[in-house]
Image: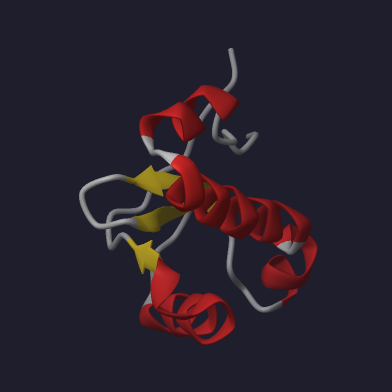
Length: 90
């Protein structure tokens, strides 16, 4: 099982500073994956959510504790979706 990371073309969906904000948060998520896993948070997908102006995060297994860890670490710039997602590479 391999997590699907956001493609850089997703950044093109938003102009200027919003794109920079999305990119910074997404890079932090990518860099923090090991630490997050130690906290029991398994990311499966993340990317900009143009409708909200935030980064939407999907977890392999959603639970309220994992959502709390993400919101505490990244603030209100992330939306943790309650729908769990797992990606397979074939």
